[in-house]
Amino acid sequence: MDLRSELLKSIWYGFTALDLEKSGKVSKSQLKVLSHNLCTVLSIPHDPVALEEHFRDDDDGPVSSQGYMPYLNKYILDKVEEGCFVKEQVDELCWTLTAKKNYKPAKDNKNVLPGKDAFHLWSLFNFLSEDKYPLVMVPDEVEYLLKKICMAMSVELNCVELEDFISQDAVRQNGFTVWSFLEMMNTGKITRGMGQEITSMAIEEVYREIVADVLKEGYLWKKSQLRRNWKERWFTLRPITLDYYTSEDRKERQGSIALDGNCCVEVLPDRDGKRCMFCLKTLSKTYEMSASDTKQRQEWTAAIQTAIRLHTEGKTSLHKDLKLKRREQREQREKRRLAKEEEQQRFQALQEEKERKLAELELLKEAQRQAQVLLEQDEMRRRQHHEEMQQALEVQLREAKESRATMQAEMVLKEEEAERQRKRIKELEEMQTSLEEALQQEIKARQDEEVFRYAQTGLLSEEEDKMKALMALQEEQEEYILKTQREKQELRQEMENKSRALEEAQRQLEEVRANRYRVDQDVVAAQRKLRQASTNVKHWNVQMNRLMRPIGPGEKRPSGGGSFSSFQIPSQRDPGLRLRQRSEEPDEESKENRVERRLSQASNGDMDIP
Image 1 (cartoon, helix red, strand yellow):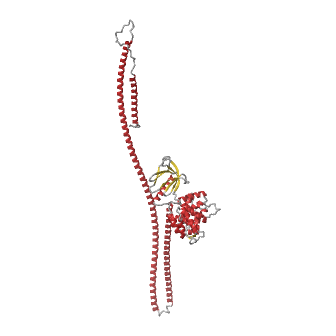
Image 2 (tube, rainbow, N blue to C red):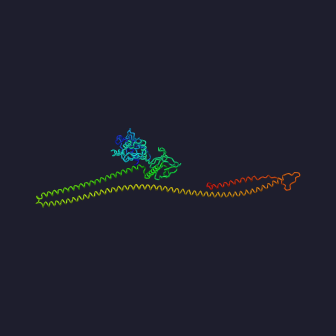
Image 3 (cartoon, rainbow, N blue to C red):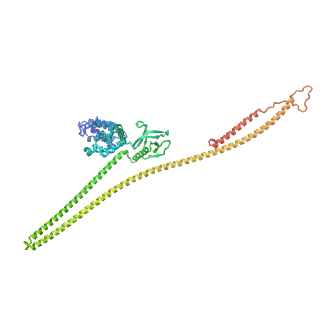
């Protein structure tokens, strides 16, 4: 069912609502208003010139549906673009028009559905109705819809009440109209007196599933792409997108995931404190999600795979496809029923032919018996008149013999005809038996073929799932091997760098030790020279002290010293040498400490060698 057919169903209700006299015609002024409103809700540019040209007031009479269809197709439906308008607004417009005229529930009935629920049921009725006008829904589709609603309410369908409604003459002959369907729902017998809130939630759920093409809805935990944290979102799955919102009121949409044939869904092991995880892979991103339990995860993965399969098969709606399949099954059942009736008619004709042949055989037998009776009577008459007819005995005897021969020939012919009739009856019975056996064999062959087809379909689906899982596992193994090789190469390069750094540090340590050894030798030589200089200074001090002391009267000049023995030089070391020695010792120690720290860092792998 294409978009044009869906729109025509709703518009048909709007047109018939304007037909107040039920004559099949609507005034032109009302059609102008209807056309203008349809252009508005369908987001089509309104062309008042074309509208006035088509509905010229040359004739003030009303216009029939056939006269309105050319304008509707040319100026409205041919310009409709899918996705540029909201179909629910079109349905609401047509429902508003038709409900004012046709939907009048009893006000004193406490089970009357609210206007929103009645609108949803009207939309569901249009979706599941047959593509014939006036729109009706076959009992099988009514039962399917009621089972979906009762399943959403977690109750069992009251089939007795449904059979009572179906058994009505108008419903049995013509099918369900939308008003009889709404009247049946307003009785409350089908819903078994469930609360109005529960009933409304169930109707809205079925409406979103069938009309709005929502395959599944519910809360899931989703892992963020940027912050990598988990947030609970309300997800809505349709055949082409997976949208997620902040809450179930669907006012703030947080994102949308486009589904196509390149997408796949996989089950993930539990991690990060989350259980029942799965992921949806697209060409650009991988979305990780977590369900509340294993059942929910299985339902979500199956629903997403169904959406991907529909997109791959080029189908836009699951329930449109299911509706077509149910219609095909009904047509096949009808064909089988007609074939069975035709077979029964043929069998009945054969049975009547058999009974007719048997009746003819009975007539032949009766004629034979009557002939035998006549023969006996003739024989008795001949015996009674034997004496009187003795003179004409020879002539009569000859005539009797001829008559008897003729009668016997006729009897032989009759017997042969009866034998042929018996053989014909036997052949007909054998033919009937062979036909019954052939029918049973054909039924069994069709059942075996159906079982084999289902088994083959299951095997193909299982093989496809295994192939997808194998390809995904192969890709993960190749990525892991590449990652491991890169890590080994990086580790080998890092070890080589550290080895070179360690060798460089050891070489520098050897140089520092050699420098330290040379400095130590220089210090020892300087100390030796210093001690020698100190000894010389002391000696000179003694000599100077001796030279500087004055000679008193009567004292003798000492004989053992020179002229400068009394001159004193202060006994002190060279301060510059002592300062240089002190500064060289800490420098050597700090240099050695730095080299040792570098060696320890290089051995730990933390030193950055220039």
